[in-house]
Image 1: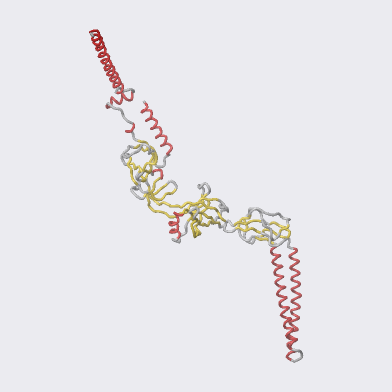
Image 2 (image 1 turned 135 degrees about the horizontal axis):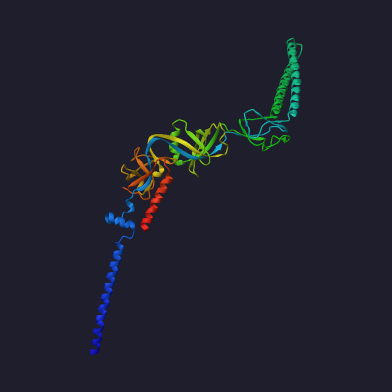
Length: 421
C-alpha cells in the first residue's frame, strides 16, 4: 500500500509539468502569428503605414470609363423588314404562227422598248396567203356589183310590169348573198394580214430581255413551251416585303395620313442602299403561319440597281420625332427594376438614373424621362460602377472605345497584382 502511494506522488508532478509546457507552446505560437499578421510585408504596405497606419484600397481610385453627352434633336423611326424584288410585268415572247426563224434582232440582256422588233419568221407563206384572199375578195366584189346592177334594172322593169315580182325579190336576195361573201372575204384578208404581222415578233412591253431560248434557223411553232425570250420590266419595279403584326397599327395610322411613305431598299448585308421608293399597297390579311403582313412598294429603279427575285432589306420611315432626347444604346443598363443609366455629375461621381426607353434605331435610342440635353452618361466601363462611384472619364464622345477598354483592363490587372501581393 505504501509503495502505491509513492508511485502516484511521483507521477503527479510530471503531469503538471507537461500541461504547463503545452499552454506555454500555444501562447508562443499565438504571439508569433499575431506578429506576422500585423507586420508590413511589402514596401507598399510600409509606405501606407507611414501615411496613416493602414493600407490604401484600390476601391478608392476613380474608375476609368467612356462617356458621351446626351443630345436632343430630330429622330427618325424606321420599321425594318425582309423583301423580294418583283417585276411589275414579266412576259415570255412566243411565236403565234409556225415557220422558220430567219432573224433575231435583239442582244441578250439589252433594254428594249414596247414595239421594238425582236425576231422575224419567214413571211413568204403568209404573203402568198394574203394575195389569195385579196384576189378572192376582188372577184366576189365584182359579182356583188353585177348583182346590184341587175337588181336596179329589175326594179325599173317591175315598175313597167315587164317582169314578175318574184324575179325581183330573187335578185335582191342574191345581192345580199354576195354582200355576205364579200364581208367574209374581207375578214379572210384581215386574218392573212394578221398572220403576216405575227411573223414579226415585237416587244409587248418595255424592259430587259433575258437569254435567248432558240437560235436563228430553227422552225418555231405557236405551241412551243419555252418561247423565244423573256422580257422583264425593271422600270418601275416593285418589292414585296413583310412586317410583324405588332407593327400593323402604327403602320395603318401612318398609311391613313395620305402622305407618301418612304421605303428604302438595302442589299443583303444591310449596309449599301440600293434604291428609294414609296409604299404602294397593303395586303388585306395577316399570314397566320408567320404572323406577318405583306406590303408592296414601288421603285423607279432608273439605275437598274434592283433585279427581279433579288433579296433586299427594307427600311420604312414611319415617323420623325422632333426635339427628343437620344443617347447610345450602349448606355442603357437593365436590372430587376428596369432600365437605368449612369449619369456623371459635375464632381465626377456616377449617379444611377432610372429612365424610360422609347424608339430605337441603329445604335441610338430615345429617352422619354429623367434625362436632359448636355448631361453626360457612361457608355463603357460598368463592371466596377455603383451609386456614388468616382469616375475618370478617359474617353468621351467621338474618341475610340477600344482605347478606353485597354485603360480599364490595365487598371484591373494592376488591382489584381496588388491584391495578390
